[in-house]
Length: 495
Picture: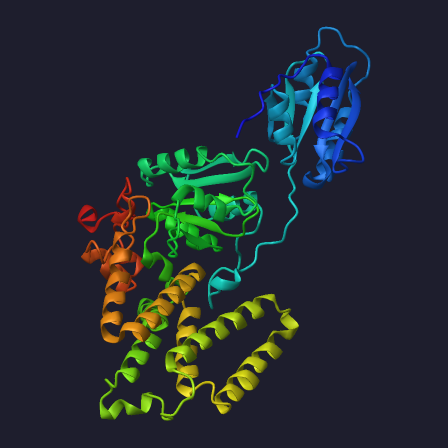
């Protein structure tokens, strides 16, 4: 997309005023953009600001400071430096082009033009509308911090820096989108994160040429990773600052997008999406047990229904397991069709729950459980076992920490069900093998998606299966290729 040529600030303040009026159309057609004329030390000055994005209380204090200047001409006085020195704010910078001035003004800063000066002054008075930090709904923990990311990039960066007070922690900000100019921040530890990874992310962000990214982080993900039709998530989203800080200390890079209440963690593997903060808020044994339960639930969400359908339709059940099959052999609808109808119904109810007001969500649950489910069984549409196993698989999906991974697993489950219904045992074996091969060939920023399972890494696999205590975790994960691989002094060095 073609960008406009930079227009330098004119020494004639009237020329600047005409250009600003032409570009911004200040007045009834653009009510939230304001301008104030003032005379300082005998010079005409104009202050431009965005009403909805500035802190009005600080702006009033600054205007009061300007009023204290005499309005008569003062000889042998550098007006520009005098005004700059009397700006009661810690963030003041100079601007030399109108384009830069407008971009900064529309992000919540104020811009001052001085007659006779070709340089303007920009003061950061940003005060974005938003909510206070609170715990994310999908990442709640029994113990631990209850703060979470908001839609404010400044607050989000502060929540991370509060947990990593290291001078080597970097927050590089840039703007994406010719029209939206959305702030995007790259966060990393300079002496830990791999320089090649940081260089790649910078290059990909710089290459984004689009009018705007109103969907923020998801749009950035599509531009950077070029995921295509792959349903499995290649980045991990988190709304918890402690999770983001933990990954930064491992050597990952975190992308923070303005207007988004979650941040992106790069790069990630499949096993990053099955971890949860609750496992690290409990003692080691309890955390490991919670992780095993979660693994079993995720596996059940994928394989439970297809495997049950395979066993009962091909009469592969031994006599002592006959109780898990349908007791009623004369069902009216084929089992595979019952399962597919149940899958569509459960997904539809989930979507309805999202769009249902909180006060009515309980009533929706009662309708789904009592009226629809029970009456459907009595009417002969479903056998009870279909409702049981599809519900168990859905519960396993809800136990998946990553919402994106849950949706991908649901797609795999439906494909396995279709393979079993059409081709029986060979279909199940072929589809399962193809599923594993597909995941094995997926690479995320040159990172194998199934690491440490494929390629096999015993240390990494042990850390995933067993939740290792922090004092025994000396080396950072090798998958991110950290510059400093030790997160704490090695035991051999301390002896």
